[in-house]
Image (cartoon, rainbow, N blue to C red; front, side, top):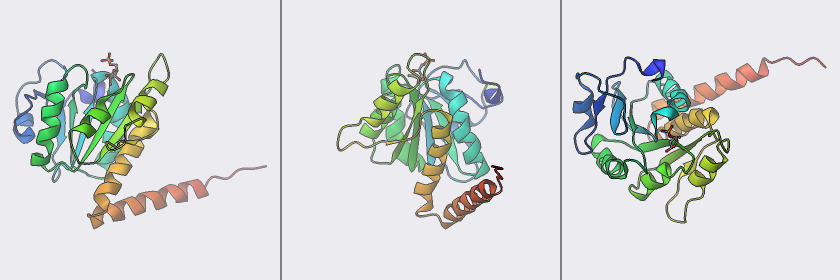
Length: 203
Ligand code: RP5
């Protein structure tokens, strides 16, 4: 288990219950697919983060860290398009009841996760192709990006850069309606520009 996950409230998700009930108290069971990892209860939870495997966490931690910086509400769950397809669909279909507005999905290899989520919702889905040992994430990238017409997935860059961009992109979607988030994003981008301008290169 990734050290950052150590203190997370963890409960098994049955696929049909309100997430808020799942994360209150309870002893952490073994880590497995279908386990709701964490819910950041700061305000509402408009962002749902799904990873295909616990092994994707290192990449997704970039997304989580950034969302925490922005004090955005989100929930995180491990569900696989291949290993727990039924639970995945139940979870996706129940998300609007919890006021989820955007999905972020990270998977590697034959990365069907984001596409399957998109097939079961009309909410926006952002896909993060996770880097793989065998094909360096090219497999994940193509699996995530090559969606058939009518079922779009907003595919990010491979790996950690994609994970950070997924957080920003999700916030940008929410920022269309939420002026506070929009202002936070503008400040974030300005800060980034200032940092770049400070770099001095001697030739
Ligand atoms: C995908 O297979 C997961 O998203 C992960 O990136 C990859 C490998 O999973 P593990 O075998 O490490 O569980 O479904």
